[in-house]
Image (tube, rainbow over all chains, first blue to last red):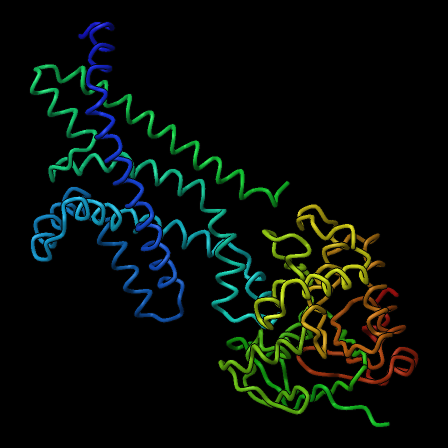
Length: 221
Length: 246
């Protein structure tokens, strides 16, 4: 086992590399979450539309994503699509993560949209608002607010899942940790260090989500 | 002067699967009249009311709103709903918006009324329902009676020609019923055309211009309140009135 002083020495001496890697992890996470929300919202709306084919497409997407491991999806995107269309590695990784997160986010949003009282839609419609206007102005703001706790959870999962981008040679946190570890014959120290960085990121993300929740729950007080 | 026909219903039928909930309804609502729909639970009165602004789809028959019939699933439905407001039993205020935002939502986004003007009109409406001091609070802070008065102001903000009320006081604590009925009575006196599904018989008798009694999906009897309440003709009506508390 490494000693405490050795751990802290290594932690500080490697901070430059790790902070760069942390920023890449954060970028991957933020891009994949934002794109994932867009994809998730789209497929949630397809699912609740009254058009059978669209709902079926949404079901198929969720089934495929939930039914296959993320690492397989990343490899398929990386070796397949990114070679065909010359997609930069960062985007191959981000889109694979977004595609993956999108399925879970779509299920979260579908659930919360459907949990909003049917009367809210009727109230909007009875005021002359169209279906899409009522959805946008009345239903979705309430659904998003209700979705925030499970979404926050999904964001944290997404952050940690981004470590799988290491396998397509992204120099994010996990890749840097394993590389430095094996170069210095000191895997355990670097794994412990990378755990600290993940904890910092998760703590940061949790604070951001909590702030959002607080801001959006203003109508409850 | 003859009153204009605001709503005319002919041979209206509606079923949910095997359940025939509206059977051959004929009815009219004249300008500035208050029509009260009464009858036991499950008699079809709420369904009939919801057909009037197309929240329920009719199976057959005709519904004319101010002389025009609306084709279902077209944009015309939104246009008609601007003219026919609705107040629900459970209020359905938008919980993520303040009282004022609730009231200006439809005028600013549907009619594209400039925000400043919409706010001014909304404040006047809130004053009218006695809730000027609640403009900036969220619905979760209001009592049931206050919520329903906001819902009335919200419906009025679209300047409808007709207001539909679906059991507006049934979800309220008894001591809050009065304030809502008072607001409705005031509207009636100003000449608003209203169709009210209600169990409040004293309101129907006092404020109603025309009473429609429904049972088992049919209009059993209708007439002006004085005649209807003092001298009902149908056996079913007499039975209903005997079991009803005034």
